[in-house]
Amino acid sequence: MAAKATNPIPSVWARQQREPEQPALSRDAIVREAIAMLDADGVEALSMRKLGARLNAGATSLYRHVATKDELIELALDEVFGEIPVPDPSAADWRADVTLTCESFRATTLRHRWLGSVIGQAGLVHLGPNLLTVSERMAALFSAAGYPEPSRAIDTVLSYVLGMSTTEAAFLTTVARSGDTEGEFIARLMPAVAETVAGHDFLADAFAEAAADAVANPAALRDQKFNYGLEVVLDGLALRLPR
Image 1 (cartoon, rainbow, N blue to C red):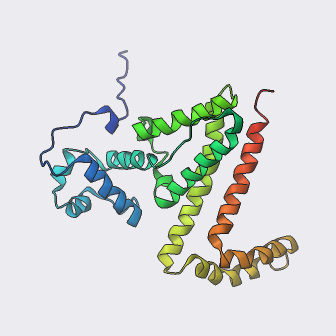
Image 2: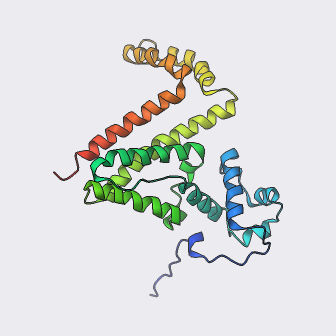
Image 3: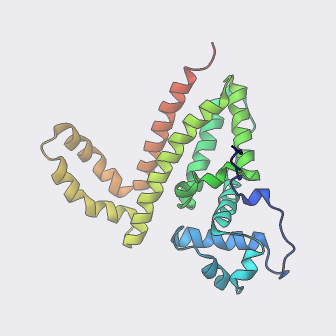
């Protein structure tokens, strides 16, 4: 029996750019405008037709630079990964370096709230240059710390960061759509939450303690929650270091 043919997963990084039909219309300009659309309205609202209209170009012109919407999102994803600085490795204080990287990753995800929903797509097996740079520099951080298998430590840390920041981004998107400030939105939820936890002493006490801060300074409370969880993850990883 003849062997079944296998086709590689298509990726924008595996294709050479064509010569532009319109000199003013570059792939960089297309990606920048696509990111603006994604930030404003999310993945579902992005289309080649709408993007072409915003750029005063037909969809056919866009396809000379980007073959599909999936390719466009792949390019946009890699572009925003360029916003994540990873410090040079320092064996003396690897936790500070990793913390700085994780905080930057979270901040990038909150600026571009569509990021978490697309980061696991199959096309991303073809990593772009910025994604590769972030991965390589994070590997250098954990290698300098003494981890024999830095990729496992990276997976653990990024799973936490991406899970927390994606949930946070989804909440902030809901708040933005409500038209309220974050504090106002939480204040409207308080009566229902208080009624739900009534009779559950531990939950009721925890709710009463956090309620005022959640309304007065919700961003600071989100920061505290993220930093606490990150410290726990890094505490666990520190136990894996060779002694």
